[in-house]
Image (cartoon, rainbow, N blue to C red; front, side, top):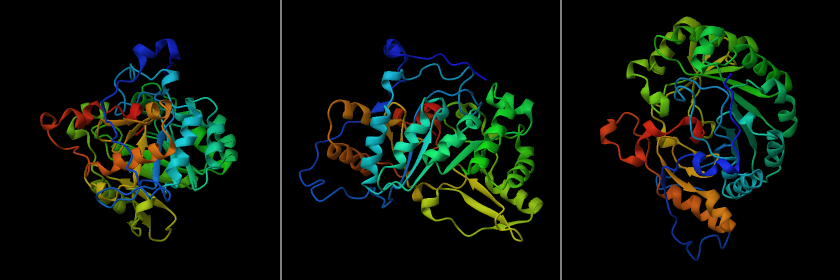
Length: 373
């Protein structure tokens, strides 16, 4: 597992994660917020109820499709990251505008000290109905019980191989047994677990059936996420993509799967197949490349250093951290969310030629761990 150097405020000038394209916010309209804050709805009518919030940009692994070799070289210094109090404030403001679900991400969120305390505090925010985590589970066996007691409902665990050697190669040093121990500890603690797998052609694509069987043996749902051209993933050749449409056909034949009822928008982008004779056994597919779901997107992202990102595939960001530290009121913060979403693009442009992309759109330079994918 990778060893991480701990950064402090003395590192700030040279270690702060690069700001991509910063946006400014116009003055708050006089009538805004007089009768409470309106729900978050963009120009396309998409309503936002789901926040993905990164608590750290560091990770103890460096997956080949997520980070460059050796990991990211620039991280936010501790003083540059959102404090727990700032995170709680943003969640209170968002909950007042209809956000109901929060997922804590990273990097690896369990690297953030006292994470169960943050979960406990967020569980008390009026209007938030569910708290989730995305993790590689390498440290989950230590924290699972405390997280469940604090109010965590579920965790999505990255599991790209059941082979110790391949797992170590794909994660650049990860230990499979630690991740499996974390998964089992979460289940034992009563946390809802889903397994997320990114298949790469000529690497781990042959393990799909084995991963499904493993997940089902634990009573959890496996999901397959198409390789996205973000950051290090953009450096993998197009032929590395395993199409979920083709994978679904393959698994439907080998595992006797039928399509489950369509998801509701609030359940996220996954589509599911299930066993006809055992409908509780499902397989999920998240197809950002071949099954664009931007028209139903209901999520916003906040990076560990407090940037609002309205789309994972775009570099434009709005610094909520700077606004709060400059004395912005809750009304001004709420307006910043509304303004940013009113200017949100229709969707990502993952398959556009790179030469045609403006700097603000160049997803090749969107580091997944820095944004909080």
